[in-house]
Amino acid sequence: MVIPLMSEFLDFREGDGDRNKQDCEMRAFHRLAERIKKTFPRLPIMLLLDGLYANGPVIERCLSYHWQFMIVLKDGSLPSVWDEYHGLRSLERNNEHRQEWHGRQQHFRWVNGIRYDYATNNSKHLTLNVVVCHETWQELNKNAQEVTGESKHAWLSSRPLRADNVHERCNLGGRHRWGIEAGFLVEKHQGYQYEHSFAQSWNAMRGYHYLMRLGHLLNTLARFSLTLAKKFSEMGVRGFIRFVRESLGAPWFDLKTIHERIRHPFELHLI
Image 1 (tube, one colour):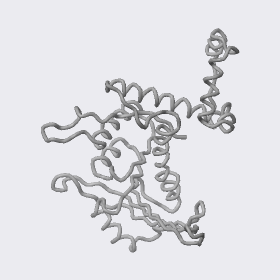
Image 2 (cartoon, one colour):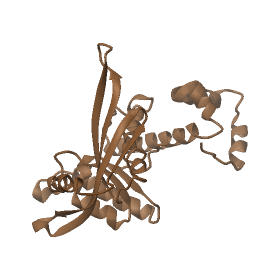
Image 3 (cartoon, one colour):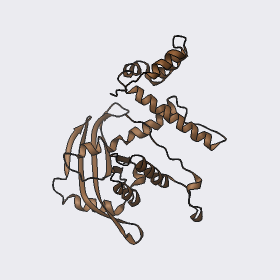
Image 4 (cartoon, rainbow, N blue to C red):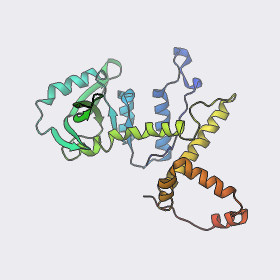
């Protein structure tokens, strides 16, 4: 279950005018991280981040907040870390794991405890853990011939990798970053009208964003509740929303009945 919880807007006023730098995702990340830590100071958190955030300041902040993370590590990112990984990989013992998962043959290899220096004159350093997963699978090409597909995935992990945790951290953690992207696609293409929104007032745009995300949150909670899950499976998301709207607007639900129902306590049981 993926729910929208907090948003951080890019704003030209948050840029650095003296150095001619605009606001960007990196600046927004640090602002949002501060808000999350302030709002949920004791909540155990794992961040699933793409390769843009594989850098010293982001990792330093995560560690200072005691947050776990799985950050995508691209081939051209952090060259010194990659050099250490390739140099130490063959020297490490018990640093690989093979398995089949969803019809794919996976080969994990990792190196723990890599030193990474950053900041001015490399004055700061971190200890990183790198894991790489090579996958192969059989598929049909456009000529209906069976061919072997291949892919590679790499992450920076906040915790050392072992044979008994690499599946959980990579497959059940890091790879589920797709759920965030899927949430954006839902808001753009499945009834939330978020792909092409325009307004003369920036505050109006922000207001629409918050209302849209609040609606998305409520719909997601309803979709995964025990009481309504069957309706969602029968009608789909749009069909269920239309059903609720038509039910509330029909004469068999008068205002007095709705108020009486709301006043009674209720529980939301999630599946």
